[in-house]
Amino acid sequence: MKSTKPTILVVNDDGVTAPGIKTLMHVMKEIGRVVVVAPDSPQSGMGHAITIGKPLRLDKVDLYEGIEIYSCSGTPVDCVKLAVTKIFKGEKPDLCVSGINHGLNNSINVLYSGTMSAAVEGAIESIPSIGFSLDDYSLQANFEHCEKFIREIALQVLQNGLPVGTLLNVNFPNTHDIKGIKICRQANAKWAEEFDQRMDPYKRPYYWLTGVFQNNDNGEDTDVWALEHNYASVVPVQFDMTAHHAIPVLNTWNFNVE
Image 1 (cartoon, one colour):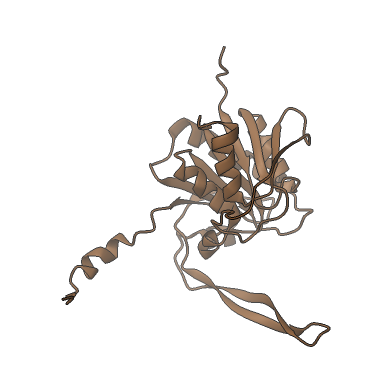
Image 2 (spheres, helix red, strand yellow):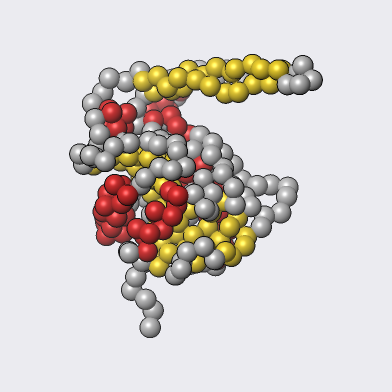
């Protein structure tokens, strides 16, 4: 008899042994059958990169009892692609969850995030998908206070589904006193980036990326506001990047091409 439990694909960008994915596995195991496909090493900031021109490795590993886990040599997006085609063999899982990321993926960070790109790839494959992140970069980060929120959000998605072409970007503040969940929009914020120039032993310059996060948005309906006020932020995200509001403007242009 076919199991009535949902099948859940778990992915991340911090690597198959990261504490965040261990917590996500634990929560998802209470909900359904869990299959994990995650990078064999950290892939933060990879965005929606895929591997081209070199082979990918997909190895089954025995890390946690009762969970089917695969280690992948590629990017977070590669993990989803391989899961769909080689593990599920075209039969889509009921849910794809990515994370829990060590560090926020709010505002503009969503564009660079390997965690969110894995979830986006799930949505591209028509799988209801969610990316989870916590405002704590430490490898000793404690994720326990996020568990009840993760469980509830996942259950709501399984029960209600998501609009076509949409996924959820969920971020948690670094506090054990989370007030609740806020549905938000992405804040208009960005990184003011700098490159710290240093010299190697051969007197050749090299650079470390640094910067300061600048919020240019005073709205109280944004993910930045929610996190600053100790709410978990939930932003619906789409992979259709068309600026629909700009189409009427561009249609007023007079293209003189002869």
